[in-house]
Length: 133
Image (cartoon, rainbow, N blue to C red; front, side, top):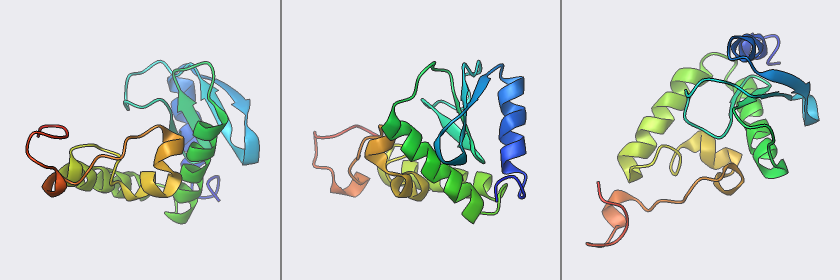
């Protein structure tokens, strides 16, 4: 589905522009190692079925997490995933100060598998505890 909705071709283009080396991954994923840009700030990110990372290795849990994002790209019919993900990220920052903790896409992909913290909601923090903000 992500080839048809053009998300995977976009991910492959980003991997080429980013100087990444591509190899086949599990479940139809393409893992693109050595992505050279600092945006977005993440250990890995997925566009269609392409998982991009600056690293030269991803553990199985992170690949599983990113594979769930590939499914989300298919459910969102490709490019609408970008504004929806950005909106979910802004909502999460507003709720707890962290871009992933209450991001519906990250929660559905598995916060623990993605290496994300479970920040408390801003209004549930006691004075003097948790992050400031």
